[in-house]
Length: 243
Image (cartoon, rainbow, N blue to C red; front, side, top):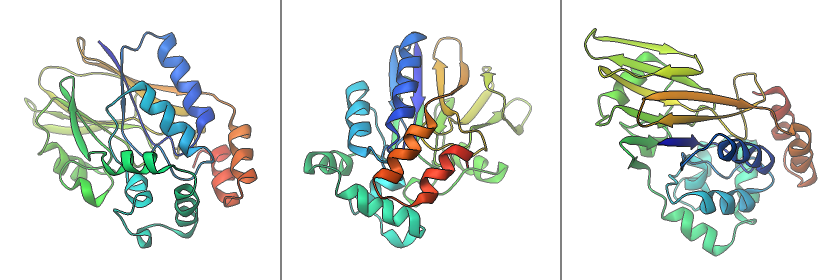
């Protein structure tokens, strides 16, 4: 079964709609969201509504935790803080109540999903090194865990037979029977690997194939919406730069 795993939309409806259209075009059968649907971008309510139409499997990111008051704003830089406060005023009470109920971790179709780490999900740390990957892999019960948060697609693979832990930025990975993996799917709405294309992953639960998809979308329109909303200019310009 072909699963789409996506996250870090950050209120960017233009990028999200492009990704969803592509998912449907390639025959995705199941949709899973890794959180941070809101924050930074100009259309948080619209993004949340679309994701809720697609799936019931939506986990909380740090921006959801901040928007609903589960996390203090002192953990965010000035631009993110301003966007979170703005976002709070764009969401309905139903939206906020839904966000409050989002879990931090979930197991879906034989794999695990998390926004950040498995070993301390409530701390919203980053998996960017072999050491931090090892920490989370030691908590992984399934073969694969999909994560987001860093906005950079990368896969950490533990070969349990060879006792090796490596990483790859390849966009197509086939997991063998001796493998465990952490797959960062990148960001739909705010990529940070100096590539402005939207990013999401597909996972074939029968073959074990993982593929990272990079899609062009109307970046300039999304950037202009941020400016029109009165949000910080840096949140607009970084979309174009992909960082």
